[in-house]
Length: 157
Image 1 (spheres, rainbow, N blue to C red):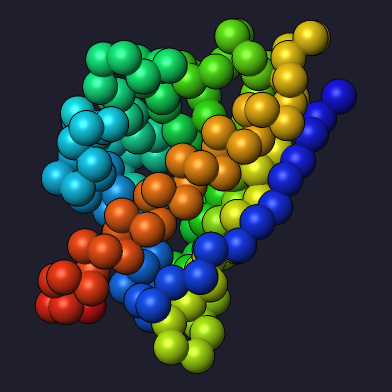
Image 2 (cartoon, rainbow, N blue to C red):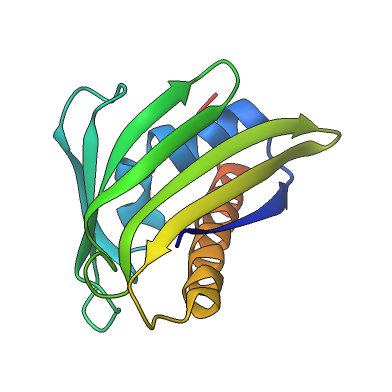
């Protein structure tokens, strides 16, 4: 049985900048601003458009050594993307499958990031615990990008 969760993260950064940094270019930015968690990242297939796959390699001591995600939908103008976990992470350990839908919308003074995650847990897995971990990870990504963009006002314009 599939499970889904939704939450929002407020940001002081305009939607297009945050989307470019946190979604489109996260594979380049992550190792720079979150090197304690992500030691390297790179596209492994495609040109960054729908169907492309990126791999993120995690630091020792984290629950997983890597994840590969496939971009399933992208609308740059609307700051919206959908991706599916295709390898690594919790696949085969905690979940059978997982996907994420992210939309960054303008909001007075910045933006709001709307995240919906859907997963199919393996039998006996505590879905609530895995959902909370995913929410924490997404919040860390957005807040890390926000801090970087505030400190670097010319980046991702």
